[in-house]
Length: 84
Image (cartoon, rainbow, N blue to C red; front, side, top):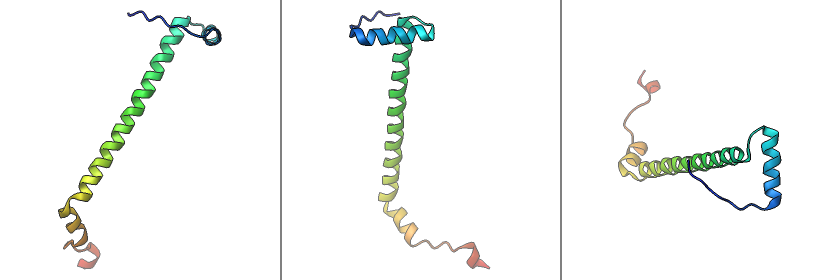
């Protein structure tokens, strides 16, 4: 496990100490959990943005394909209702 030294304002250090005591964990454990939680949230947000961007790119590709536009406008397939 690596070591990471950080300087905190006294007020933040006191808040973290109180929260860690309330949770029954050490300050180190509290900071470890908080850091892991934040990293997970940031990675999940980025994954969500990547997913949305990929979906948008696929949608633009479909819209840009002239064959798809032609088929959508001039489809020769008739509706099952009309085939009675």
